[in-house]
Length: 249
Image (cartoon, rainbow, N blue to C red; front, top):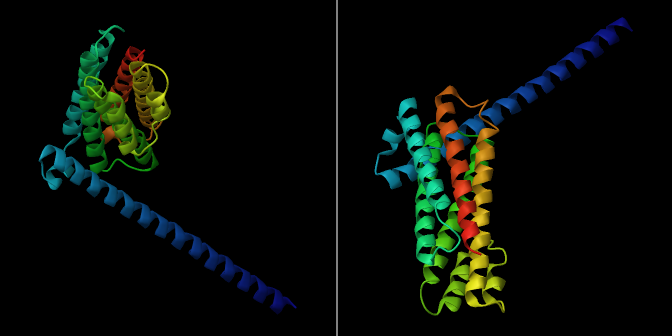
């Protein structure tokens, strides 16, 4: 009986050991997959930034902590200017002035995108990077659509041209199509559409701000200062978008 008990114990120990090995192997496999995914994301981000800047992929991946901080600080300064520009315009602004503000904030948002993707190319990643990119991409797409719509609003045959632009966008445009098609005077309908789209941009970059801010404590020292600048830049872009949205009454 004692022999049987000892044998049972040995079998149990063996099974537990096998299970532990299985867990460790799975964990090791998951870690390798995560590491590979991060490397792929970094390479892709470096290639995207390379296209915009003209720098080589290896040059981008070799940027120092100070280089990253300088790049992010420039975005922060640009965003402060965009917010100040939007704050200095009242509700009676013509479409030409609104178009100017939208062009300025779009340029700033594109610089923000470049700076953030540069951080990703240097190794900043994980779920937070995906969340930021999702919000950022949506904000930039909506800015592109508003820029197109406000340009159309300055010309003739605007209603049909605006409907076409909204349809070609393909993404979520809220009530834009019905606003433009509605019984309101054309300007009121298109203004409501652009107002809501700029409100979406405000929400997208507010999301970017929160995504980065909520994960600052766990960020590597290499990225922390740069990310702090980008938190402020995202806040300024969000504020500027809200101010521009209010101009479309």
